[in-house]
Length: 193
Image (cartoon, rainbow, N blue to C red):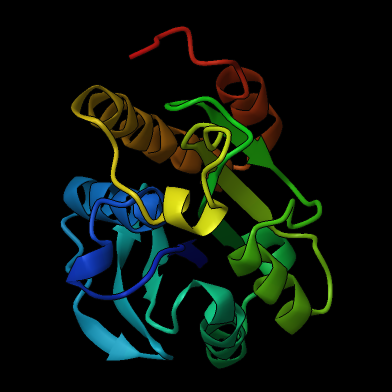
């Protein structure tokens, strides 16, 4: 069983913001699988189903970004999965170009408060992640204002394509081909808006 967690903030105010790209990837997975992500459980909205013959639980934590680890810990404990092999976390990343994807097997939070909280609740940083590039914040911008801001229409197109690529990457990761996914998807986005 795989637990796939997309990070974001609950509520209409945060819909389509840079910080909520994790939720967008969960929506893309839901579209591909036909899984309804509507059940309120584990401080999250979840959906259960099957992807490529494997059981999956799609998760959108509802704790707000900085407390994402509470929801993730609760789900890991409930379903008794091995988080080092069966947890995939999708988050935004301001150090990557808009539309870029970076697959990792482990690593630091890189300044991302959602990842930082998950690492704190798990007690280690060894879990798979898909980092979605949302672009570097412009000079003079507050980081919180930037990640809670919306994409331009050009950026939105790139992010919609990136979400589809993330689905492909996750399927590859679930098939046990994490290294292959890293080789294929850890490239710079060649498109610019």
